[in-house]
Image 1: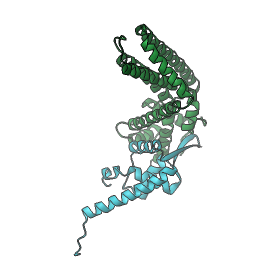
Image 2 (image 1 turned 90 degrees about the vertical axis):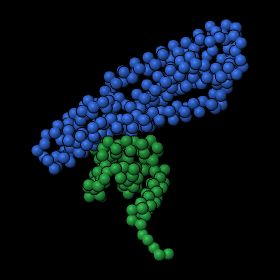
Image 3 (image 1 turned 135 degrees about the horizontal axis):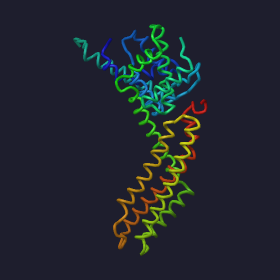
Image 4 (image 1 turned 90 degrees about the horizontal axis):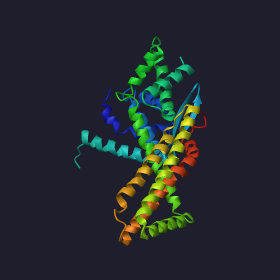
Length: 112
Length: 230
């Protein structure tokens, strides 16, 4: 398992990206999907996921939908129009960040 | 293996025991715990419901549900103040602006009377008493609702506690710090500031204790998609 601290600042971007690909998702589904995609490398903790989701919802980036599934209610999250725009921005920021980190940890020297 | 309705109810009770008393926040956590318990049972079918539940709960960390609750309260409070601000802004539109200006002018005139030292505090306490009566009425109504439905909603609680508490304290502080010790020879600027602050306190009081509670049902339905489902 990798260093979870390194992923911490990227939680919102990860959530937004997943929702951009999956129309609507519920909390538990997000944790499982991340586990599956990263082959267990990244485990989103419950104590971090819900505060992040509620924050994104309050910022107007996510919309909620509630449906009765079996004998319980399920809260689904989906991107709002603003959320879709913000996802693009956050992903761009993430790419920049990755590029910068790459340069720092693995600099390529050229003879130019 | 799927959870039974009784086990779902037990999960609601479990969240209540861990200081989550609002139905809206409980619902999301109950679904999460239920999904996780079902997943745990696939891997370890021999575990009892309680054992699987405890394993799932431990994943929330040492503070349990507290992180979730704190963030939710923070967001709801922000939302509440945005709504208040929206209503207050609406207030400053014609014809309400005329009422506001008249009220402001009345307070200003009142301060110029020679017996302002009796009239003004008297007026202030009358407003306080009216607000207190409104607060008690609202509390009674909510208690009755809770007894009938058995459900508390976080946003509804915030409408009540913030609305009542802040407004009454706000009014109290205006009275305490802005009103002068002596009403003799009050300067024009002091009179203007006191009148403006009193007008604002009355408007905020009216919006928080009358306008918003009246729209509470609509706001709850808008905020909680599940409000109508249960």
